[in-house]
Length: 412
Ligand SMILES: Cc1ncc(COP(=O)(O)O)c(C=O)c1O
Image 1: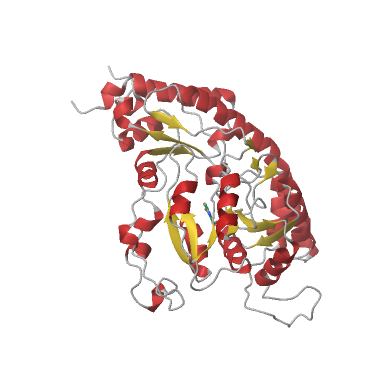
Image 2: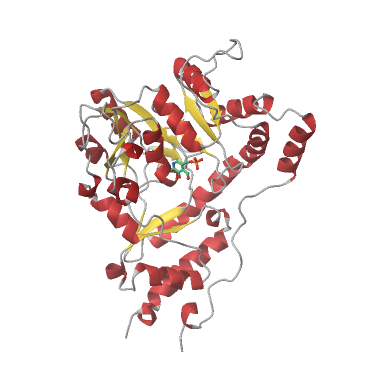
């Protein structure tokens, strides 16, 4: 008789996982308060949220934006990135990291990531720096801070701006200091899937007063502070956040500390249990990371070492046991059509920009760790980590059950 749920056995669990997004009275009152006030536009709530989030991350200045992509773009442009520049980014990230570079008229250059953190491999980053490199974007992948000590050393050596893609790292700390202002500036996302959300939204943090003023101006139609309303000083855009978003985020921020603690505790338990199973590589723990957000729980599955089926079948079996999981990105960014077909005509400016004056052939890029992660990664969303300790025991039991009964999944 079959044991695995995928073959008709009883599943480890049938209960639902915690809902996302979460909301309560706080959010309802916050939204109604703004609605009734009639002040819906970039005012007190935005200011209040900027101050609260800056304090939460330990940064001096915060500028809200309409989303994380806009925040990254604004930070890059205000750090001086422009036409003809190259920006080093990891190959395993969301497309927005590359988009922000292109929107700043610059050229993304991919480096590899580490297989046990999924974060930028600093040696690989160093190997792709050229005389055109102007900035580097460490992405704190699913909340794990990158090795900011080495990244800042590399940046100082080559005079590069460091713009953190902190879009997953609300609450994360590197050696006691929050992400976002560890480099020159960093951008966070509050899109619906994120650990603190207003549906959409973003914020840029920095400790540099001049840079903060520039980013404020850029994201607010290039206005000056305390200057006439219709004076515009440079190219800018409208990347403002609304009062509704800020009010919602203030309510959400009230839960973030406790949620971060719970996700971290659950993830550490899973690391301890799952790392003991053959063929599973959990993410490396790092003592320099003094607190970390988990925007999901991700590990690598090596079918051969596990003596199990291909990843797709393995995940189907886990899902049948009641564990919500998926594979993550199917390919590193450079494999997407945008980069594989790059350079054909004006739509590909900045890649074909005369200021750049070089050709970059992304079809030649091949980064083994990023490609391995795309083949082997198994991830569970952050809401799973909001479960109880018993829920985590169910996850471990499901992985063990699939391992113990793996013969049921192999072709006869
Ligand atoms: C790593 C990373 N960077 C940037 C972004 C962009 O954030 P937003 O969707 O708020 O523009 C995301 C969003 O998912 C992301 O995952």
